Length: 147
Image (cartoon, rainbow, N blue to C red; front, side):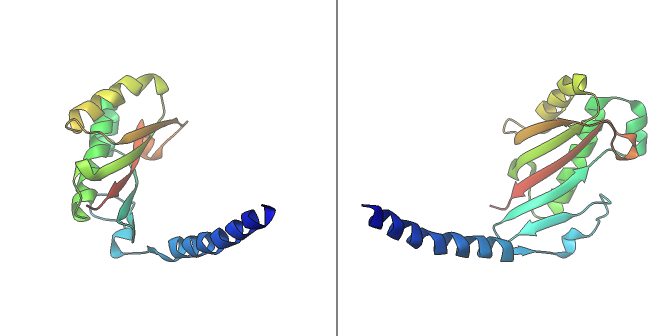
């Protein structure tokens, strides 16, 4: 009985090793990795049809308003513009991470998400941080999938 467990383990190990090698070798850089007209941050695409969008934050004028919901919508609009450049729509966003300087503003973020996404929202993780670029209250990164 111990012999068959050893044989099964041996048979699985090369497949896991090959799979990991394939995953590491399939990450490719595209011109989209460079800053775009919509952001100083870029986009990274992987052969598995996943598209990663770096953190987006609102412009200085929107930040000055202090309205977290408006800042969230502005960051989401930047992600929408970058997604469009990659051939994706907001419904193609599968996961977002929201960095928020004031966790008590989570309700404003939820309201912005409800207004921005028509029914089907991506999964969302919210992380509290002490400070963000441009003194923004919100920064959002996203992962989308090409269909």
